[in-house]
Length: 202
Image (tube, rainbow, N blue to C red):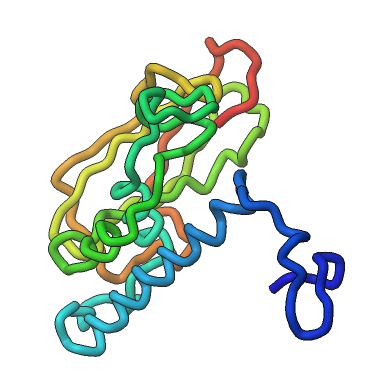
């Protein structure tokens, strides 16, 4: 809703106080929230209609991290050929992230066979200065599948072009009793930073 300083006059807004363009997080955040709400709503409809089986899950709903994975996996990459004035690159970049939201593709991905695994790294904190042998607790799971695998990697810089593996596993049994909503870590790795130049990670 427009605030008092945004050209309100009586019950109607003064549209001349608005610009015809918008950009940045002020523009992207409401769009992302709107598509996330569509994904959540689709999941709820399927659960209530008995088409998304949640009986064996502790969290009987789609999780926020699963929604995030769905949005990211279905985003359409914005590349230099798209004509943007930003210095974007193929794949993830600091200007457009994973790309442009695709609401239909995101909603269509909501099914027991296509909801992706979820992952979350709980430490070290963003931009923390690390040194020596650093513990890295993290969460990984695939609540809608029977097995899953993970690869944990690190790299320096804002837009690294290569990553160094830290830990990986495959063929792990999914745990329906856990979800990212628990804010708990079910795995841990140790990161040897002794040979790295001083730099804030991750």
